[in-house]
Image 1 (tube, one colour):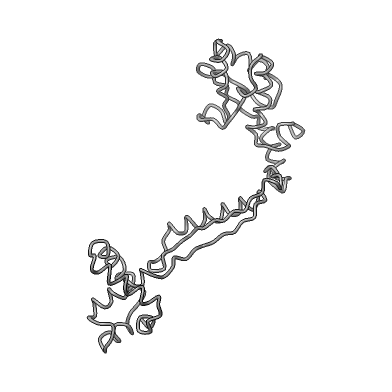
Image 2 (cartoon, helix red, strand yellow):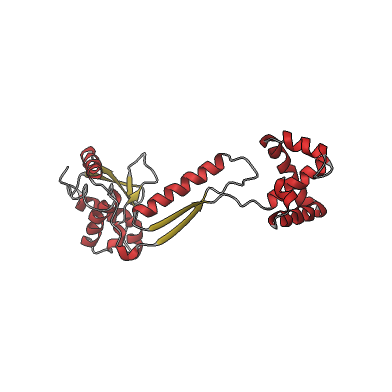
Length: 246
């Protein structure tokens, strides 16, 4: 019902039902922690489930189904949900359509959509690095996936009140460029002359995409090739004019 204590207020629906179930366990002389209700592993049976009767039975030396029956009896008529017992003592909780509608209306009316307000003392400074494409290779769906996940996390942290920085880090240019330059040198024979100039004039992104994978693989297997690429990278980063031109 719209005025239900379970429908409004803070916390999710499972947490609120847990309060009532916990009170029933306390009334039976058992610890309130046994009243925890969570999303069901068997949604075909009920949306929420509580397994506390099994733990309570072990602690109290009682039959778990007997405890579950006592809890269900105490909960009868106390809320807009139905409690059934399954197996050795699982409590299956099914909210009524009215309760679910009231909960949806409460979330719609809440600018924070039911999320609790975090104490400012618990706010954090958060740095999220995501995306991370390699500039020597084309982007692919994996980069899109990590970008979406990273941006979602950034927004969630900001929503809870944290101070957040997001960095879509573009992979540094470095050894990849050395690999490509050495691969071009081996293909043409030298990094100067008419043949090299013609190759550079016709060089396309597709050519670079074709050159890079075998060059990267060769660097893993050929120590001499790898050392040449490293030295070329060092000279490039040191500002060698010819390499910078390439």
